[in-house]
Length: 132
Image 1 (tube, one colour):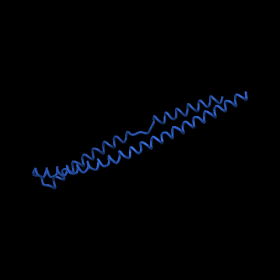
Image 2: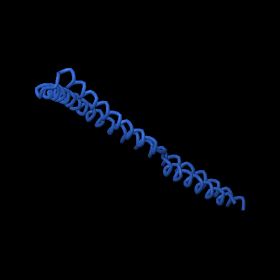
Image 3: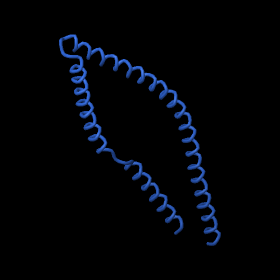
Image 4: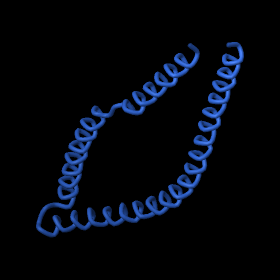
């Protein structure tokens, strides 16, 4: 009987060591993948920032053109730019409301937490059965 308990203890120890090694290997793999993804993300971010900067300059030129276009229609220049500013303030307010509504629906990673808890419970139950 003692020999069986000894073998069971060795098997449990080995299973725990194997499980720990699997977790370490998965963490190492994830770190390598994240490092590779981070480099790609950096390259993409630089290109995106440059494109957004150029796009913002183009939008600024369009706004100035619209202001002078309204002025050419007979509206005083100061009023034309004031109208454009008011329109942009209204659009910004609308976008802020949409952002606030979307942000209020954000939740944490509940499925991942549930899956992790389920795994922990299963491992605990298996270890409890193995000790009996």
